[in-house]
Length: 277
Image (tube, rainbow, N blue to C red; front, top):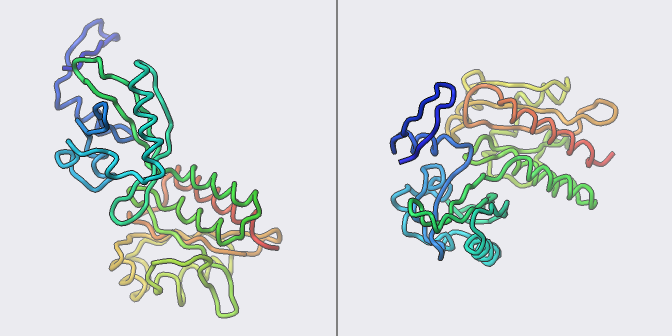
């Protein structure tokens, strides 16, 4: 049972387990508890979803079953540190793991509560990979003179998010129209031929189109792929001409959230800075 003080009313009350579970599930991060050797004792639904399990399935499994070999020793060291130092928050630790056939990365914070009889474990808070991290890596690549394709690849990953917010692709003008800067698994119909991206190429204006408002063929391709909206962001060169186009096929209808829009603008700025003149 979790207790809390209602200072404004000069009273106190107890929060039942159902309320506590709802609060944990609403956190802007995933939470799980492990024992001293890394076996999961408790997990919220968002934590289990990261590795495509249910909380019940995750309990009893070792977290080392999911992390990459490179991350395993770092994670083990972090667990050991959390075990040695009570009441100290360790992190963030960048951990790479595989789920659903693809590699994902998260930041983990941990605190030792092994001596707490109500927990008896190490409490871990996980933040899924963020656009900011990958955009930072794109800037780092730009600073080392990496080719635009490398930088564009990191920008594409930054836009994806987890759970998937959008699948992105960077297009650049070619003699035959617009072509992808980096390889993509997207259906060719989602970036080849005529589409809203051509208006952006011609006018330099950003576009938002819900799938229901797309042309029949493009709408069918979007619906089949599970997309509900398209955002088209221009990358403008020094002369204000479009030098590349960033497409985001969104899993939800409507325009980007304020946080997503900020990341999109940063992505366009990074691409602009690194693009060859």
